[in-house]
Length: 259
Image 1 (tube, rainbow, N blue to C red):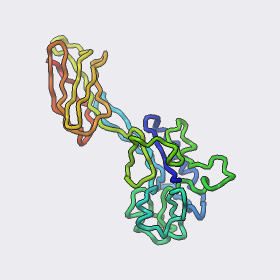
Image 2 (tube, helix red, strand yellow):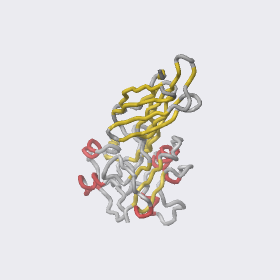
Image 3 (cartoon, helix red, strand yellow):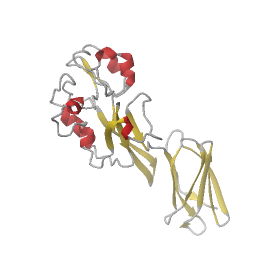
Image 4 (cartoon, helix red, strand yellow):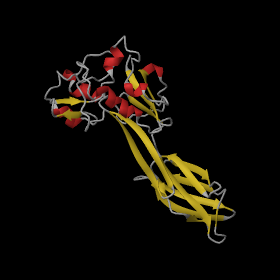
């Protein structure tokens, strides 16, 4: 059965325990024939990416743990450097891959170790998975996640309907990859007060999405596809429409006067 990683981004808090655990497992440790020692700097086989989105008072931060090298594209390109496995884990064997800088240059998440002359990347902690005496028998990033945002197991164990992959050939699946948002504060310029309870509608080729301004006059159109939108705000006969695009970035808009 093929092994996969399943990452629920709604649970991820950005604590970086996964990234630290990977470093702890491989920096200063050689697990041949699975993996040689990882350099202390310059390589992140598991990397937590952090992105600040929006502007002003309407900002969100998204966290995405990125596991490199676990893609069948490497198996198609250079099967001769991989450990033969039935579980689908991609394990670049150091002895087989000596001198293969091309692999590191071709695949994101695979790094070149200049000192050892080998390409390196995540091996799924296969040395732990294979060790019947190991108390965890799972990748360290999974074991160290305090909120169980990162899971690992047979593909059949997970409901992958709707799950997405950053690489279509990767064995890393994500639940709730971040989509774009539009947010703003709506106010009444005559009364010089915020507007609570206004109905906000965003229409674009990807669909129609609605929200309502809260007690602070804020609205959030969250997790909407990247697109061009006509955003209409309505309350008590007043109406305002603005054109907004999220194709390049999330939109934390300046305050909107409802007139």
